Length: 147
Image (tube, rainbow, N blue to C red):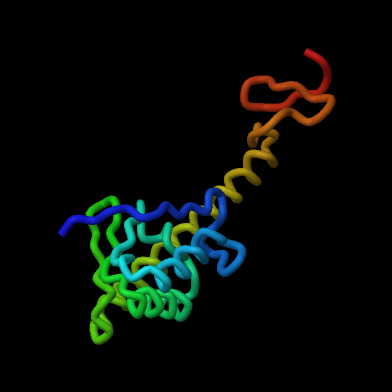
């Protein structure tokens, strides 16, 4: 079966943790799926680009999409998630497990990056951005005074 792309939805720079009006394109995706009977599949770069919400919210959104006629979610890596069969609980659990695993990885990565920035700052190393006023770059460090 071929597919025709009917619209693009992108919440650039907005975290998948946010919901409702904080993610206007995701909100529009849900509304459009409910109002368009030809809306049968969703294509995403990665499943966690769709949502990083709580498991109950993800399950509720998947239910709304399935009731609206969306049968499948396809990912760029080739993964396919079939959501149309309301008795296929395993597929919903699989989606939630993938999303929660990705969400945990994201939390851990953010924590590691923050710790690395803190450690670099404590050692006087550059952590990014412009040097503070009155400082200059000296390799990986900031040094006081003009160059």
